Image (cartoon, rainbow, N blue to C red):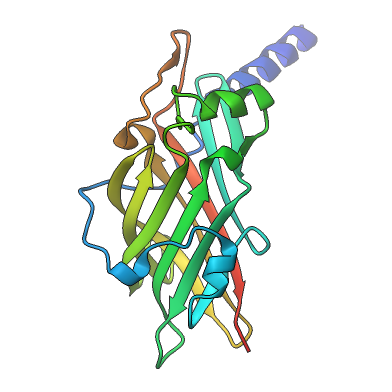
Length: 220
């Protein structure tokens, strides 16, 4: 009697874990119409271009990660981007970030499943052949944020050829040695025209968790 009950309990636990939405406990972004962006905030196309931007700190894979978690009824998958380049500019008179701009090479998408990686690059999802880049450019960075974050970052995210304004909490720290930015939040993929539903018995959830972890050394 004990063994069947134990097996039943284990199976139930696996099913519950598989059904859990990774976005349930994350800050959920509300996407709105894009906002005007200063011309100087155009993202660099490569890390070497970012390094030549006067007074800017470089955001690159050597010191940063941009990752995501997507899920469906039966479970979730983890992934991210191997290639991206950006800049973070500090205010001239104080250790505060005033502008961030990043461009992502969508063909550098990776996941924990190679078949999924290739599917994400297809027209069903990112459509990398037609939309090879994603971009994020800030329009406002202000102190204070949800869940104890130090700041709230607002900016235009262009993904899958669709541009929307998003705001999310972030923990930002500027020291003599480096700038660090950390944030984790959920966006709705359908806000950006990514509407592939998945299989009828294994539907893909709309919310995708983004996790950003940046460390940019300060120039001497």
